[in-house]
Length: 423
Ligand code: ASP
Image (cartoon, rainbow, N blue to C red):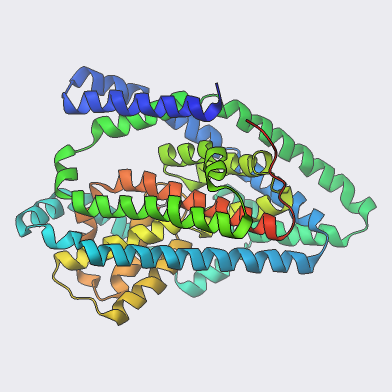
């Protein structure tokens, strides 16, 4: 049986058992599911542990083998342009849907106050975290690491990516006799990392079961009811952007059959969904792009780590809907100028969102502030926190599919994608 079928079975079983525990209120089953949650956490840790060695080795070898700095510039420009445009499209789609559905106008003040009270503590924690966020200039400066080892140790992927690209470019400028041993060393690290991913992925079906069952068994069903319109709008928007907009883009830019694209990338989507983390999905995403979409290592190792760090189509779409939802609850009418501000700030906020669980609900503060909802930020966030985990799972899928669609686009246009026949 194929891996994604096994993961899918794990997920379906997780949904079923988690729902039984939750809806029937079976306490012992809920405790049992909490008890096996560490299996999922172990998986996330194991797959995350390979990110740093894999990104460095694969990107270094990839950049060095490009051989031509102009080509690197062209690929970089294409990738960043694709990421920015697709994110802005996602935000616009979110805005359109939220304005049409008006999820916020259906919440009565009593529910609003109850939600705000219930999640006030958690929201305060997020606010404190956000207040430490660096400014735009600091963010740009932080991209240049003072110490690449510290960047690796702190999981500061963007700075590490910048350093690795510079190092790879420098290697390609050396005579082959000098660069060859260094590259051979990192090629070995890359290959060993791939082997480790294969091992860790064997655990995926069980881990996905544990993660999903635990989330569902703990979920507040009443909450979902009051936030149904909001959560439904986000979910529909994400599904539409992923499986219609990006499907068309994949077809249009790389000529790939979207069904084939989604089938081959299914394990990445399932891992993204169950871990809520683009970073955790990155190793399997790299492997999938190379082995199942046939994209060259130099393209995949550049486009995907960058995407996991700066490209968040799903997060941006979700932020647009959430901001409109909150402003509708507070009776704030947003004109065209404010909506344009949302497109801009949500696109930038998504760039600044780390590929880890619930990062998007912290950077949403930037968007809320930009349209004058500064004083309502804390309560605004408390309103949406209750359903955030489930929406996080969904938006992470959109985020990684966005990265993979860009990978196919760049691979195809650079003549470095040869989809292997399989299945
Ligand atoms: N969890 C998302 C990701 O890793 C980020 C977010 O919270 O929106 O892609």
